[in-house]
Length: 180
Image (cartoon, rainbow, N blue to C red; front, side):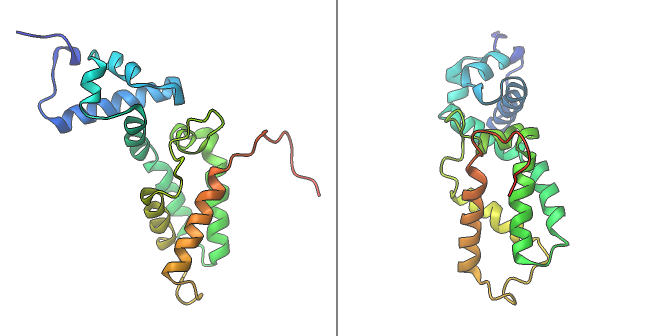
């Protein structure tokens, strides 16, 4: 009986295999950050790269799947912060400010947004997934968008603007406060 690979305990289903790959990806991202590859994850699992490719077509797809899971706690915290804000401008500033403040502490935000190394996962920052997350966050705020004269189309434009602002990193980094 074959016992090598998957630590001698093969997954019972494709869902279990994907869950194990994501868990190994999370561990690799914690130690390697954006340098994580399918080879690293395969080694951590004791499987071949081809096994991981069976579930994820590329390193980017694997990292994106893990990042979507990994940003959940951040998104929940941001959502809680927005619930009491009633001004549309204040909501947008809080979204941008809090996100940028958290990037250094959130490995998956760094993977998604920090393109200093050219490896940002959200090169298509205005992807459908990113827009859905943005829409969900705005909907969870205390703002009555329609009463403010900001309908769905205008809200979509604000989401795109916010996503674009968040993705543009401050390069080089600031060494002190802004002066004016």
